[in-house]
Image (tube, rainbow, N blue to C red; front, side, top):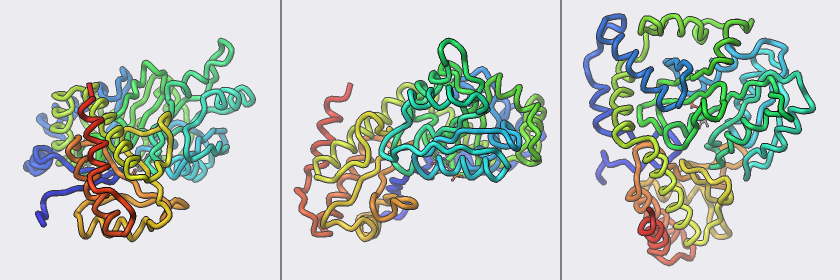
Length: 387
Ligand SMILES: Cc1ncc(COP(=O)(O)O)c(C=O)c1O
């Protein structure tokens, strides 16, 4: 086995490009020195381009959940009413965090095989003028379902009058790999993490705030300290973070953002769609059920159901141990029912062929009836016709 050749096909953390990893090994510098301040300003400005916002982007040393918590504590006061869209594990997390800080949480549980219907959001908002924020998940990593964030944002326009609720979106497993033009879609706040489409090791997360969110930030009464974004705003004006940042990860981020700029955002989105379509065609050809239909299919992760004669967890173990491809399992209630193929960040069509090859081998070794090469062939067809 080539131990350094990774086939990490999970929905994050994702493989880190060697040049990004090399950047992370540069010597640590003074985080309040002129050089690092320049770099900090530069990556912050570049991140605005990735979020597609004129608002402000703040870097947090912490995983994606830290950015989610930062959004909650800075944008909602205790006792305020919020609507949380729950279509999987990460939607549930928004609800857990908001409750932990004393918000009045209304959960809208929709079918985990689908996204949230904008018309239903419009109905719920029309019936409740007190809701101050809607929390949504852009790409539900637990199910491989991508929400229609543009539609959900527009659903706040109620018969000519805009509902007051801010739209706060978790795009931890999509930003950089799927469109989320924050300003154009009128999204008020977006959070993401370093270790997914952004191709950086885990440890950094980001919060982007539009004007309405920036205004709210100053008024909210929730107790907060490390995640008080007012401190981040103030420090950012001087090119600094309030507390010691993960300096080496910022070096890595600089390199990863350069790679993304070289490729171009639109090309990155197209590459992710291609990977999705290849994987879905391959899985279909192998006779396994896809968790969600075309309308909601995520460009960054695909969930596949088990089938009679195929036990998901032993299959995943076999694919990992014998064929060297790491697939993700199901989360929560979906454990044992699905496996998930991550196709985000530093990955391309060849990686999908490799993953499908390992899946075919794993199916054959599990005694599941499979025609070797069928999945790969279907994926290659998609690739060949890709424009
Ligand atoms: C959609 C989504 N939201 C939030 C998170 C949480 O991020 P982290 O594990 O970095 O805290 C994840 C991580 O998998 C995710 O996929």
